[in-house]
Image (tube, rainbow, N blue to C red):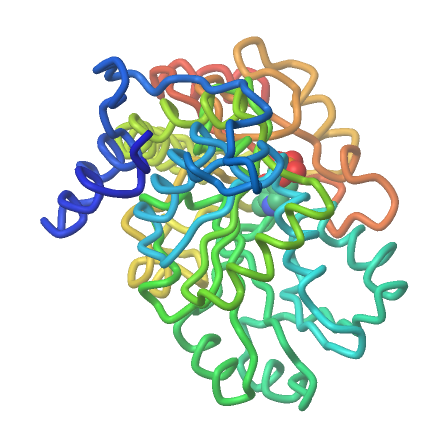
Length: 387
Ligand SMILES: *Cc1c(COP(=O)(O)O)cnc(C)c1O
């Protein structure tokens, strides 16, 4: 079998295609065996090899690599513009693998508003792995400079962040990381690769929970890492192979078609979220709206510089307290009370309840994942719920 990384894929990469076109074609080589356009799903766990174990078809065992997974990795690599992509069984598996590449005694600086389970990973596992950590508000670059140490290996940021939609300056942070001999890791889940390409802004590593916008239909769990450096790729490949957090062929196959429509979906998610944000700003029952597309957002200028659009995620504070926010969440008819994000359907979530103990979310904060419905239906639902 021909390598789906080669031939037609390589020829297309040489064309310097635009992102919308890359999304449709990357990793999409026509099946050489049958001419099938839709990607074949190879469930085989094992592949024929030579008598001395020679990989005559390039594949040996699916935990190491699998043809369906390679297509997904090629697509994610090209969407992010990196040297290589690696697919994992979940976003958390991807995050854990990155930390597993660090030697004990390493130090990592995190931005302060990050996904709750990455915070839990930092709290519950990194100390035992001998990795030292610091969590800081990296909107202030002086704070970052003061947090850097000779053993800092990664700076780990989320922008826009979860759930406060803070915006961090990727290029400025990357420059400081490199001066300190560290690499910048960007969790790009909220933006998706079509709205923000951190590697173009000098970041070294991009992580996604592909469960969210990349899959896009709330029906598959996955994660990925895209890197610039072959050395880091090889370390991650080894971690994934030996520790086993590999993406299954079936999940890889489910995520791929999500990528094809990602640019179209992100446009609609963003337009809908902008309309909802404007309606919430105008409501007297709302105390604050966190959406980087609002000119009043403190990170708006930076977001304009590093993002193509502002995405489908927003949070807002209900005037009053926890009970008032819960009342709004209980009254919605179209929005679904559920966690996660990036699907076609709109979701609402009282984030402090979901995160539980240790949550940084204000008690009157509701987080919205804006779907692909008509924006007026979403706005009417929220306004009736706000009373
Ligand atoms: C969901 C999420 C993760 C974790 O991904 P899983 O696929 O749930 O393991 C990491 N970062 C962000 C920003 C997320 O939203």
